[in-house]
Length: 71
Image (cartoon, helix red, strand yellow):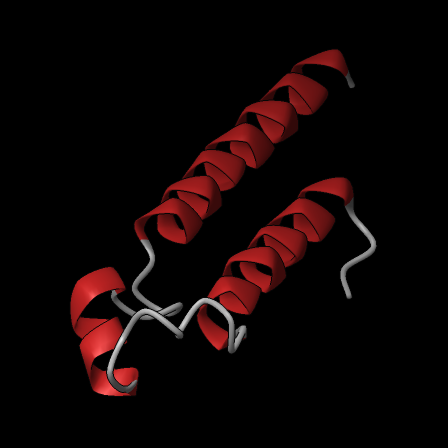
């Protein structure tokens, strides 16, 4: 696990969303894994995970730019 705050957020977001895809109780309403992936997609292609990664990268860049201006 990451030690930087943004790294922790990124990994915890990924772990949390991936858990949704691997929880057997979430799959009860689908006939099989393929049907579930067709309806909700996969953890690797999850929009929320990609969006949070992009936002965290922009935040890290902004913090780095501000830090350079201060120092």
